Length: 286
Image 1 (cartoon, rainbow, N blue to C red):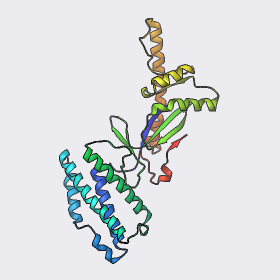
Image 2 (image 1 turned 30 degrees about the horizontal axis):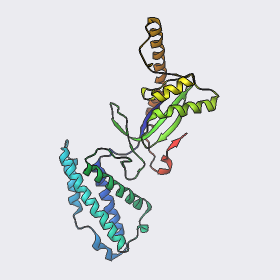
Image 3 (image 1 turned 90 degrees about the vertical axis):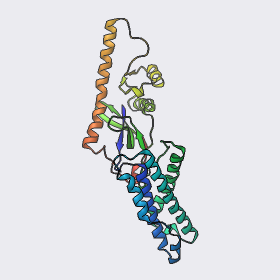
Image 4 (image 1 turned 120 degrees about the vertical axis):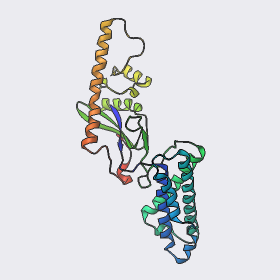
C-alpha cells in the first residue's frame, strides 16, 4: 500500500496571482450590480483599474523579485480588493441584489471574502501556512498537499491511498485535505479480513506506515510488516543475512504499487485531473 497526489488542472497558485484574479472578479461583480439601476453607479470605487493592474505587473514581470517587494504589492492588492468588497456592500445596502448575478459569480464572491481573510492573516501574522488554504477561486475544494518530493515539495490536488492485492489495485481513500497515510493501514487490514475472512500474511508499505501503533496491530494479528525491526540486529550472521534478504524481497514487492502510480499518471491522466465541478470532486473513504 502507498499514497500519492493527483494534481489538479489549475495554474501555479501564488498569493499575488490569486489576489489579482480576485480583484478582477470583484470589478466584474461591481459592474453587474451597477447595471441593475443607474443610480448605483455612484458607489463604484474611485481608483483606476489600470493602476492596480500596473502594480501587479510590476512584480510578475520581474524574474526574481525580492520578498519585500512582493509583500508590498500583496498589501496594495489587498487594499484594492477591500475597496471593491466595501463597494459591493454599499451597493447591496443601496438596493442591489446578489440574486441578479449568475450563480457562479456570487459563489465566487463568497470564496473571495474567505481568500481576503486568509491573505490578511498570513500577511499580518508573518506566517507561511494556513489551514484550508484557498488556491483557486473556481475549484475551492482544491488544497495544497505537502509531499516533500525532489520534483515538487508541494503538489496541488487530491491525495489518494491505494493498495495492491494479487495484482489488482484498489482505491481506499480520496481526500482534497492533507492527511497522514499511516493512519490507513489498520482500516485497510480490517477491510481485507472482512472481504477474505482472514488478515493478509504480509503488508509491504513505506516507512511512514511503520509506526508503533501499526507494529503492535500487525504483531497481535500475525501480520508481517515490511521494514526494519526494533532493537539490535541478531548476532548470528546467517539469521541476519536471511532477515536482510526477506526485507529486500518485501521492498521489491512494494515497487508494484509505485508502478501503478506511474502507469496511472502517464497513461490514464492521473497526473492532471480535469474535473472542475464540486459534485465530481467529493472526498471518498471506501
